[in-house]
Image (cartoon, rainbow, N blue to C red; front, side, top):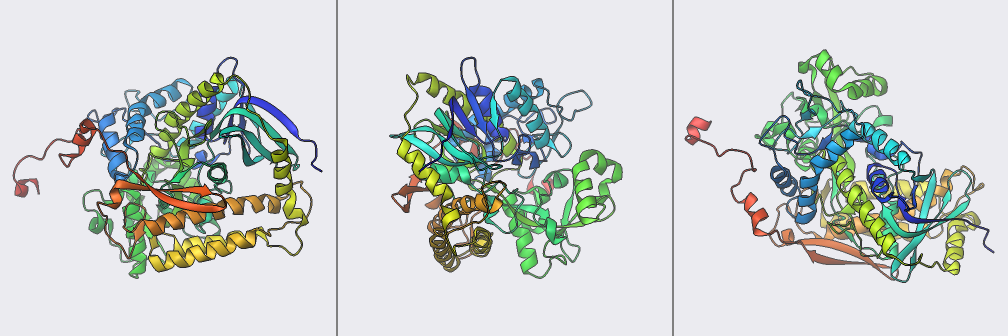
Length: 588
């Protein structure tokens, strides 16, 4: 018999309290609209705070030639042309307004001498474009949005694990889950639900992602009937901490390279001059990550399997002013003073470009009343995300998702219905691990999944490795049916992991199946057995969806750009960049 369940009723429920979720909540919370935010951790501890370098927006404060067209050009080119052009167009056009809006709400950006928002260079951006607050921009963004959401009278439910999206026919009807502290169940009836749950970097052994990043939202959406796209596209940030082992994978902001840091191999060579002579250390993340990987494979890696990053030539005063967090991070965690010595870095799983397929205009998914924004959604970043685009993505599409969810909720005459039998079945499913005898340890399953993904679906991939990885994931999925935990429901992380690992197994399968289908190398997806990009593969996105208990895969055509946008790519140079003058010898 099921226990009594705490029930709440709202117009819009948002899952996730990072930048995307908070921005969506602010948009949804108009007078008369009841909005709730459910967060897995505590308010203010979302993964957004880990984004250090800045938020990309074509303000033109330092480079007057910058414009939304150049930002669009850089975003689509770095995405290797498989993102949704309309998503990128909206993003590039609206990002400046969202930054100015954030400033109006109290965000304290670094300033130019004449008082404008300061902007720094970043990898693969044509112009200096990242609005920043030292190297803790994400923290400032969360601080500002959090206070604005509280002022908007949004209700917050903290340390709450969402386990299932409930449906009324083909439309969303609510969210079910439990409080992590007590294990007490709660049901949130909703006319609309916004997913802002972030990525799933915890699938990999070395990652910059925090413990929350297990892909709960994408897995729940998949189980509810939503489509996932571009799942093969997993970004490995070039620079994560390497040593000591306890901090391996912690992000070293791209801002270090943006402020002049250089990469060196064990022979003291500035190797990026070979891999990308024009952009060097500020090449796109996929290029720099592969370059470090290749240097290590060639025997030119650092003592702990990475590369050296050196910014000592900029001087201590400059480093302490521009990169205070990086200085403190290395001094505290690795006993290294980056003002005096170079330090080791290596690629770390950082961001998931794929996710829930979402409409560019409204962020609507293929399930009615369900919206997705931020890292959990796909469409903007294609095969490779530009550094700094993630924070402005949260602002632009968080706002759009919140507005669309509110309008949908206001358009419904009645609250969708929820089947009591479905609620009881979910309670029984969530409690099942307590009654399994001699079952599987969820931590063991997680560790084995991380090993599989890192070995078979990491930076370098091939057919044989992916096939072997898929077989191992399917075996782990079967074993997860008997996952077990002991103890009580109070303060029980082993119980929580039972659901996290199932979400990660679903997404691991989606990544590998999509990676097997994309028989080319494009952006973050590097197939050593198919090393080149192909025109045929550049016209499709790979999509997975649920058919009963099976995961199916199909292709969807990449939306074609209208002529006026396509023309931006015909000159071979970014908008705002003048054509070269003089003879080739003179230009050299």
